[in-house]
Amino acid sequence: MEATKNVLVTGGAGFIGSHLIRHLVQNYPNYRIINLDKLTYAGNLENLRDVENAPNYVFIKGDILDIQLLQNLFQEYQIDSVIHLAAESHVDRSISNPMQFIETNIVGTVTLLNAARTAWEGEYEGKRFYHVSTDEVYGTLGETGLFTEDTSYDPRSPYSASKASSDHLVRAYYHTFGMPVILSNCSNNYGPYQFPEKLLPLMINNIRHEKTLPVYGDGKYTRDWLWVGDHASAIDRVFHEGKDGETYNIGGNNEWKNIDLVHELCDLMDELLDRPAGSSRKLITFVKDRPGHDRRYAIDATKIKDELGWEPTVQAREGLRLTAKWYLDNTEWVERVTSGEYQKYYEQQYQQEAG
Ligand code: NAD
Ligand code: TYD
Picture: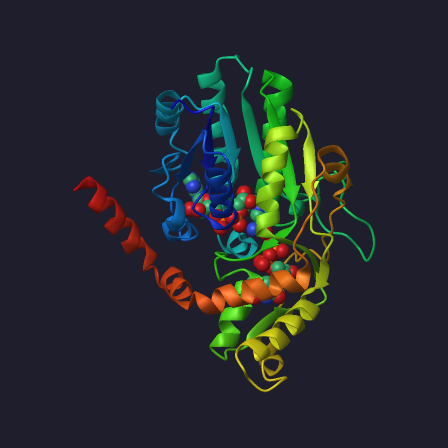
């Protein structure tokens, strides 16, 4: 059967990408979903074990900076749609190694844009280039206010500056070359399969091992948390129903100060681990602040609600419980991704196929 769409998803072995791939493979049997991922430390094929043999799914190990590979993929799979998530995504790593963020997030995005532009040769009917971005491009808020799609960009970390730069380039290809692009900027995601360097999985893992819980600065930094499955459904909605050239903000209407969220998590973990109430809170340690730490992010998601009818479905406490339970039920996954064991899974998997 011929696929009705050939969708190239980049970064599909990462946290959000793996949820998106699962969602697309399961909900769109007539699409062919091609997952291009370099499998950096953050990419893990184990995240996709349940769909890896699906007839409408193809995995390609490769780099978005490899223009020859991209050109071959566009040809071979007749790619008509791109959903671009591949990125370096951790702010702290961008502070210790900015260059990797420039290469992947900026140069990688332009390389992908160029590949699409060359392959599509100005025939844009039925084509779409969807760039997945972050609310961090807008900089930081004070106690009040929300980021709208019209908020000026004011990125303050190498990560957010690299994402902002890629957003500008994607829009430039719309205005300059008429490419059918679309963007979304989303708040902090949480849920299963997030690499345990980000706040929630790191804290869950440390509580399990009774290690200290490093809270940056005064802990009063605020983030708007969105259940990752809700982000996948929002991407689906924007991809299918959004308008070319538009940007949609995606958020959870779910603001927490870090310290309040960590307290909530501590109490939940005491219950799940059957430990005396208050024991996890004792592990909290205030540590040196992140340089350039943005004080508050919060999304106004009115546009996507009014124009595309999307709203988050998972409430904060329910999502936190689901997340904590998933990490406790999947401790082997955590051990493997943190020890590099998952690389062996990849080698084994593809050796078998070759043989
Ligand atoms: P992640 O770090 O978990 O995954 C990134 C994936 O990209 C990994 O699988 C990695 O192997 C792959 N990758 C990295 N460099 C690559 C390259 N050069 N070529 C091909 N693949 C490469 O990231 P995530 O949290 O899933 O974020 C996905 C996207 O969503 C990113 O663009 C990020 O900026 C954006 N975003 C994330 C959040 C969040 O809270 N995590 C919020 C809003 C937007
Ligand atoms: P993070 O998960 O790194 O996401 P982002 O920086 O993209 O928002 O961090 C979320 C918040 O938690 C942020 O304000 C930094 C803070 N944080 C800590 O306090 N301690 C930690 O160990 C980490 C990783 C983050």
